[in-house]
Image 1 (cartoon, helix red, strand yellow):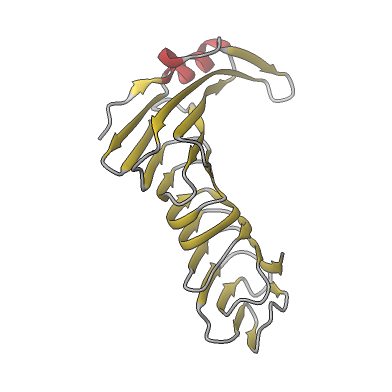
Image 2 (cartoon, rainbow, N blue to C red):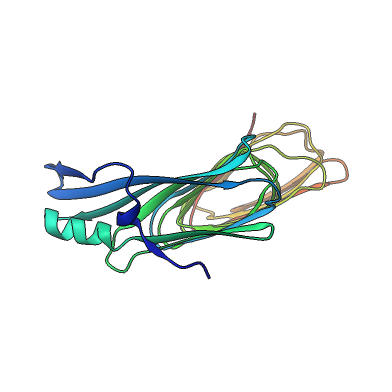
Length: 248
C-alpha cells in the first residue's frame, strides 16, 4: 500500500479559515495538486475515508490530481487539528494508479482526478460522492452517492443514497445499480437494444420513458423492458426509493 503523507505538508495555498455564522462552524482548508504520466495507465483504484471524488476523462498526457483537504469544527483549533490529520498517497505500479486518503479525526479530502477516458476504476468512498465523468471501461464504485456524466462500459455501482446522471451506452455494455436508501434517476440513449429490469419501493414508484421497447412488464415496484436482442443489460435495485429513466 502507498505510504500516506500529511495533506497539510502539501499545501499550495494558505489554509483558509471560514467562519460559517449560520451553522456555528469553522472550516480550515488547503489545496494541493500532483501529476503522473498517463502513458501505460489502464486502471485507477481509490480508497477515501471521507470526501468526494470526481474522476473525469481527459486527453491530456498526464494524470492530474487536484485536492482540497478540509477540517470542520465549532472552533478554529479543532478544525485545524482535523485538517492536519488528513493523509493521502498516490502511487503508480505498472498499469495501475492507487489513490488512498485517510483521516482519524473527522476531516476529509475532496479529489478531482483527470485520467485517459478508457481508464478502468475501482472506487471506494466511505463518506462522500463519487462522480464518473466521460469515461468508458470497467468501473466498480461504492459510495454514499454516485453521479454519472456520459459513462459507458461495464458498470457496477453501489450507493448508500442516490444515483443520478447520464449513460453513454453501446451494445455489450452492462450496468448494475444498487441504491440502498436513495432514488435512481438516469438518462439513457434512445433506441438501443435494452434488457432493463428495475426493482424499487412500490410506494415510491417506477417511471420509465419508452426507449423503443418492444415488450414491457410492470408490477408495483417492478418493471422489465426489452428491445431487440437485449444486448445492453441494465439492472437497477432501489428498495427504499423511486426509479426514473428518461431518454437523452
